[in-house]
Image (cartoon, rainbow, N blue to C red; front, side):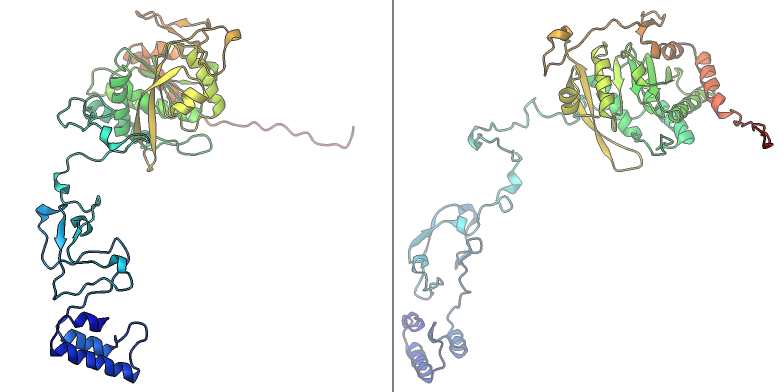
Length: 452
């Protein structure tokens, strides 16, 4: 076949080359399958100034059409004709006649530059990012996004507007807390370190509640499992809630929270920048002893690690109270589906922790319209609010606030003047810090005389 291809050139060189091929075939040095293609013939084939193309590859991703002249980029995608002249050899292999290119064959330039997301000529002009399609949606029915459209995604999401920096008064409070209990905290039951939100995450969480949950100076805030008491002190200073109460079952954690509050109050008495003092206090008790969450409007809990039996009890208390907002760190599949809280999800936000790379999702829930039915007509799968007439205690303020007996004393103390609050906190902390060492009395031993 090589001889037939070269016979088109004509002349003495082709005749001489065919004679040498016949001579080497007679000597037995040629290959049986491909004819006269020995190294000597290949070298002579190159010396005759005939182009030798690389081996033909069968991979469709590596096939490229060899062009003698460059292609104008403005004509990409337009069919054009490739003509093989008499001075060129068809590079396609002879064993595949269906792939042999004939003169005058029309091809597309897409074969030369296959379209792909990584190789586009107009990547610089792309302004609309690709969007995923639904299962039964075609690209033709997707509306084009208009950059000037007023329905753009909020760049400050999940916030409605940009949040201001942390106030100086709040920074001063956290400085006093770090001097006493550090940034991480500890001394929990068995010695583990509890999770503590960073200052920035807590500041963002407070402003998320201000924008989506109406947290303000008229709000009554409770932290279930207050620990070191940082969220209570934060919301008492910014935005300055009417009441901020934390309940803690561990005595060591409760005393650490009171110690932090004492440091903040002492700083205020020594010339604190803010004229208002945080109306905040803590309760040493078990949330199981409470009947409702009255009088609080915002029920906050860092709920990571809460056991299921506690969730069931919290759901019963929340559904029987009038608290409109629930802030926790459990998704709706647990809060709504599993434990049947009578709430709906409003917004969620990621938070970061001190001392580790952990991050948790915080959720803000709003109470739904109650569906009050009798216990005999309750249906499975429906969230039901049972109104119970629990005894409530009046706080004696101008608002006529009614409280659960477990929180009544703490709420009344938080609404007193600065000196009364500071005296009560000092007395509680110093009673445990300066407590004398417990002494054991030895019982008088009686000698055994051997008698009865």
